[in-house]
Amino acid sequence: MHYDQSWMGYGWTGGLEAGAISAAVAALLFALIHWRTRGRRSHGAQIAWAWLLALALTASGDLWDMFYFNFARLESLQLLKVKLAEVHDPDGISIRVLCELVGATLGVIVALAVCNARRPPR
Image 1 (tube, helix red, strand yellow):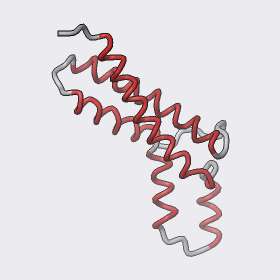
Image 2 (cartoon, rainbow, N blue to C red; image 1 turned 90 degrees about the horizontal axis):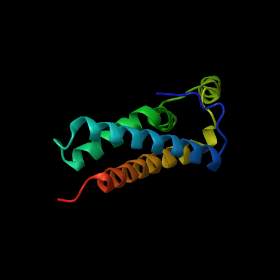
Image 3 (cartoon, rainbow, N blue to C red; image 1 turned 30 degrees about the vertical axis):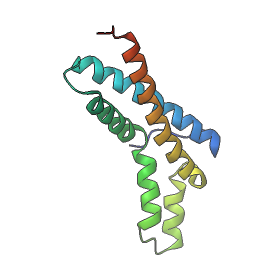
Image 4 (tube, rainbow, N blue to C red; image 1 turned 90 degrees about the vertical axis):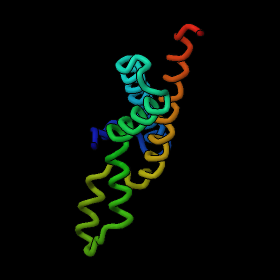
């Protein structure tokens, strides 16, 4: 799912902004899943669902663009120009994808630590 990236920076700046968005979404999703299941699921299932949903919501557009530009047959220069014009910062797409993956992972880890710190010991 592509969200409006026109306000984002280029290169590492845009990657860090995308990673921060992924981290925030992953943390919120983990907290929501943790609250909704109330301990009926293991932490592994909660982590996996939160991470996958966060990546589907925040990184799927960039992942698809990266896949498309590597494997699609762009047989004309005009088609390539049209496709590249639709992408914000095509030179920094791999940095953005890396930061989104790392951000989602860190968001889930931080949310897990916060949820476990609030739980009373047994």
